[in-house]
Image (cartoon, rainbow, N blue to C red; front, side, top):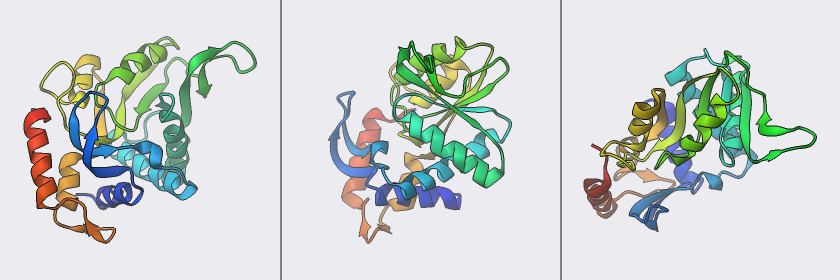
Length: 225
C-alpha cells in the first residue's frame, strides 16, 4: 500500500471522520462503520485532505484534465481544497466548478459556482463517498448540459465495497458500467482493514477481533461481488 494511503486512513480516524461501532445508514442498513466527511472542519485538515485527493487523482487520472467538479454541497470544499493542492504538488492549474442546488437569476447567474464549463473541457468529479450513485444521476445531466465536455471519471475518498442499488457490484463499479467513465477511491475498506486490524492508531486499536468479526459479517451480507 502506498504511504499516502496508509497516512490517509490514519488521518480519517484522527479526524473522527471514519468511525467504528453501530450505525444506521440512509439505506437502512445497520453498519459497523461510518464515514462523515463533514467532520473535516479546520484549515489544516482541509489542506491535508486536498493533498490526499490530489495524489490519488494524479495516480488515477494523471494531469491531463481541466476541471474538478464537486457536486453541492460537500463536493464544494473538496474541489476547492484539491485544486489548490494539485497546483502546489504538481504545478498544474486545475479549475474548480460546483453546482448550486437552486439556479441563481441575478448577479453571478446560472446553476454553476466557480469556473464555467466550455466545449472540450475534461472533467473529474470529486465526492466524499458514493453508496448508491444517486448524486451522479443528478450531476451527469448538469455537466452534459454545459456543452461538449468529457467526463474522465469520479474520485471518492473511500470505497465502501458494498453492493449497489441494482446489482451485486459495488456502487463505483455500477457507475463505471452505466456511464462508461473510470471510478476510483483514495482507499477502500480492504485497505482500511489491512492498515488498522489489530494495530494501534491514535493510541488505540480501532479494529480488534470483535470489530473484525462484525465487519466480516456485514460484508458477507452486503459486500460487493
